[in-house]
Image (tube, rainbow, N blue to C red; front, side, top):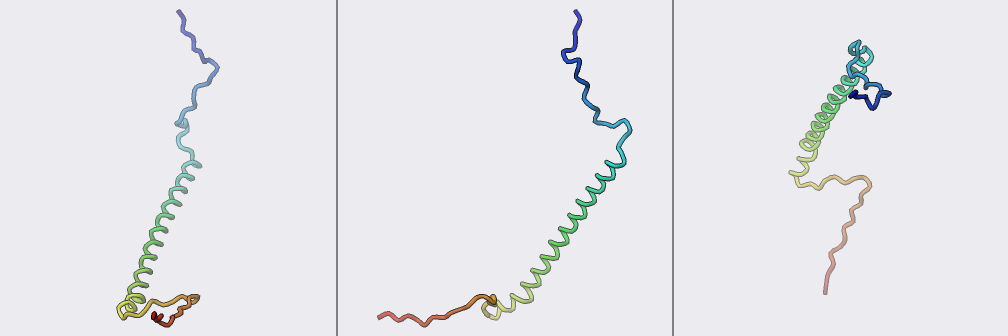
Length: 90
């Protein structure tokens, strides 16, 4: 009994390992991608630190003395406060 391959016309799958090793172009692009990711991560961390420092300074130097003194918070330039006279019933 001879066993025949039912799929003789299909070529074998390509090898995942290149016979020449890693090519320079794929190595350089992966290195560039890794460098870009690292740089963006560092930039995001620096931005978060600067934002937190800015918010800390804003709250501690500008808002906190106003809250301790009992002053109302500053109004935006487009807000208008209208105080009505007390309503008397009776």
